[in-house]
Image 1 (cartoon, rainbow, N blue to C red):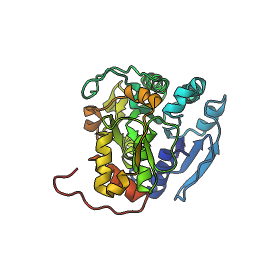
Image 2: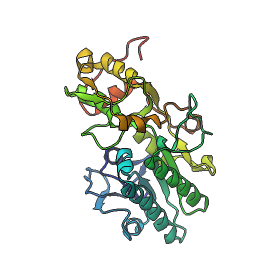
Image 3: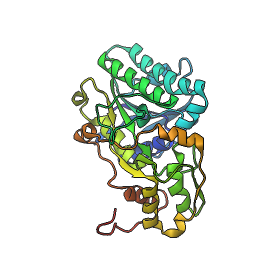
Length: 333
């Protein structure tokens, strides 16, 4: 594995992925020669047993994608995007970053030619689906997004499948669940409150809940997301055939179930820091999101998620707060 390129390396998932690659020293026992980190802002270079190079630019700007792939990375993780709330608020920016940047990357790879065919792992989203939904969305459910962000990701999925079919690269697209609990400060994602109602109370801070407790959603921890990416980097993509877009496994939970999991792990005092404050704009966006999945195809291909929402909170407490948590009681989630 001569070169690995991570686009979107300064984001939360990008930072955790690069830290994992540095800690492991390679991929599935294969050494990495050079790790290339790219984002619109400078990425932090982890201490690693291989060379790490960072660069900052706008992927959607003319010539930038060509510059990134000029050294022919063997593996490309494309994680870069603006989040759902921002893509909905700024139509032009959403399409420029989430669609034009991706198209430029795919075209830059294609134009190299000369037998160059890297593995491309792309992070898509469950936002490619739109209501009305069945009880659990299976692998045959149609992609009919109800947000600009979901539409942009759905177009990217079609491009990835076609460029892979034509042999320009070996692509796989992962429809990630909402990642929870996200560390750090809140971003402009409409889904940010799902993390906020856990993260802030665990830090002794008040959190705002803008939707009813009955809202159900699909979640995975950051640790599980990194596992998805690494599995996609090395799996045999011949098993995918022409269907290159996969819905990742996760945990379905209502907001009320999230709060009860928080109560089990952090007590009533943490729960009392959650303040209900309805927000019609966020509720309108959330109503168009899927709630539950039956991801049989991804499970059969070896992708694994968290066991419960209690485990998702436990992972945050261990990885971000340095707190060891008690094992679940018998009969408890």
